Amino acid sequence: MWGALPATIILRNNDKTLNKETKNRYHQKLRLLTNVDIPTKERELEDPLEAIQKFNSCIDYLRQRTRDKAKYSLIFNENVSYGQARNLLGLKTFGLTICSILIAIQLFSIYKNYGVGLNISAVPIFEIISVIITVLFLSFWIFFVSAKQVYNAGVNYSKALLESSEHIE
Image (cartoon, rainbow, N blue to C red):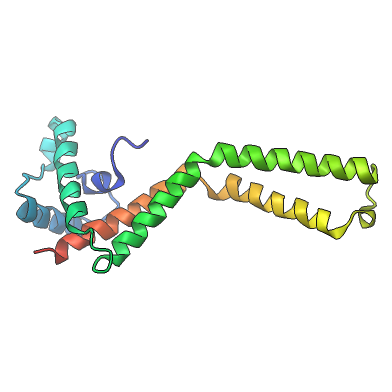
């Protein structure tokens, strides 16, 4: 979706998510931990695919070293949030479709049973509440579930993963 994993994007020299000093510190630590020759800005521009492979190798190393859920609970929790955001985005079309169909059925049922007009007092409260809840779910799918939400969750996970490099020996 973005051309690389969020953690890889953050490690790239042209990305501004992290401040320069923090990124340099992570690059140095990853070089020591993995023996991967972290690309300079110039080398990354010359061969971006090789740079991505090297950064991915570092990320793979960090993921392998931070599997302990108790010791790295922040990473685990951020990964769960990232996975949830990705899954919700994958289900967005389905969620929108179901909510839209349900609202149409609910409104048709109200129309059929209680007629046209604005006499809402004739409609039982549970049917009104049902429509309101469905509209809230529809709003959730429209306004909350987005690619930006997935990216932000990925960035939070990536930051937690990269921070762990400073605690690995």
